[in-house]
Image 1 (tube, helix red, strand yellow):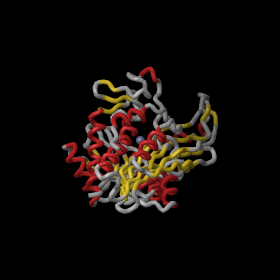
Image 2 (cartoon, helix red, strand yellow; image 1 turned 60 degrees about the horizontal axis):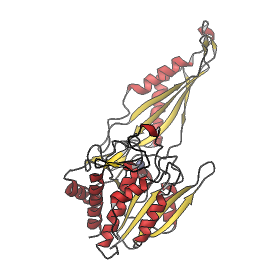
Image 3 (cartoon, protein in one colour; image 1 turned 180 degrees about the vertical axis):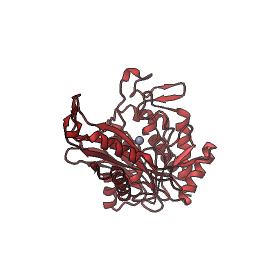
Image 4 (cartoon, protein in one colour; image 1 turned 90 degrees about the vertical axis):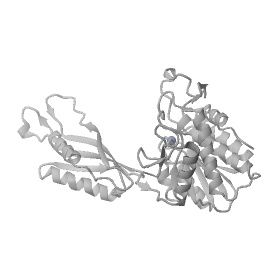
Length: 385
Ligand SMILES: [Zn+2]
């Protein structure tokens, strides 16, 4: 059974699967994959204080080599729908462009992966030479605790294994084929807290203004780069995102001042070494005069990079042959579910062009859907040659 990636993408886009709602999107994938002979499982995960999430696992074949496609069907909210050129869940095609929330992030790429798999199987009388799996979550755009992390664990407990994984996040910057993500930076959040002594602003000698200490520490932490980058990554970066004092009284020196920050870090650091580096620099900036500490938030986002090798060569070769472009190997951008998948098998990310992801009028060229399907098909044919 062949599948049309454009029709399938449009059908997925019409499902209002705003995270964490399933919206009918997994049901569409289940119907199509079952029709092609995949064994399909739903795995519903929940935790206290989080909504239950529906996830889908599908597999055809059981022998090696085992290739998995991963992705998510949930989408971010559309915002003010009246500002969209076409309604966000109508899947309108206008001038060769498919509009809709999730068009590039990432229902479009999921449709391409399914269509390519069905085409590949159809050319082999429906039987894979190894096995093809789909790991699809409905919890990527939200808090991401009942999604890929648990789905991978669930699959492992069932004895499922994967040799390689392709994640269809919108990896390309401007044109299909320009970028493949081979890793991701880590992300760590902290709050810098400086203690003072509240008092009248006209009698500063009787108070201790924490704003002075906060500014000193912030300046100290922003003064020097965290590193010079590494072979696969640009330099790590610390950004302060908020200064929180909350003082509405003009003649009052506040008793405490806080500043929140986020660090996107490369493979020069572990979370522990990074925390130590920041605290050492804060200590040096503070001297003896400032009472401070940092509250670190737990993070499940370490940096990682997928090593060069035959799988990367195969994927790059397929992209180059189909698109005519040699993709840049990139580790830029935010985190993705690849950070969880990498604990199970090597993972690469290649999908559509990400320019309009999370924006009003999210869209993809229909020609890109056809071309991405051809890329995935070429990867499958090579992988199972
Ligand atoms: Zn995404």
